[in-house]
Length: 258
Image (cartoon, rainbow, N blue to C red; front, side):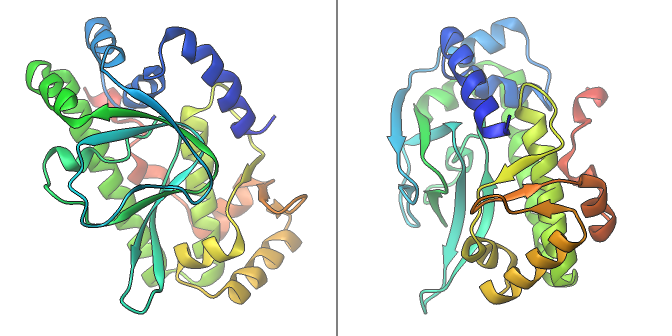
């Protein structure tokens, strides 16, 4: 069973507890929250919205009034150059709040689009702000979430700037492996990555042709497969060795220091 299908199964279970329980699950992966804190998050007002692949939820220059929470599917942040070229600067997974920065910044400095079909909970930023001012543990969890995303951005900058193409792709796949398993209800060694070669090129700063060559090389090494249009991670240790991957920047053990 792929993480996407496990998320769908988990999502239907979560719905009985409330849509925002997947956000609570994400925050609990790095922060301590009391039962009362969790109930307060679950009670935040929200509206459910469905978006297709490529659908836009935030555009650069917008003054946001809501914070979308990704309930299912994948999303990405992008920056677009004056010549129309784009760079994917972040991937977002179920449980991620897509615009916590607008709690503190007036205008969006990037676009947020859906990578796959997605379901979102649209939470008023004013409600989140009120919650963080009255519940310090929730405010701390929100801050840690923002800081971890910044840590991932720094690693992506290193990935594009200093790793060769093969290590660059392998490192990204290792990161997705760990982030997916942090949220999924059961660990999985093998899962699909719903990124096309063009999207990987926009993310890794490579051409689609170069990405295709690297994919074929990882296939020959037995690290990944391509049973469909998506990549499937088959052997995480191989990818970790190729990229010298360390998950320290994901701060997955942060809760142990609280």
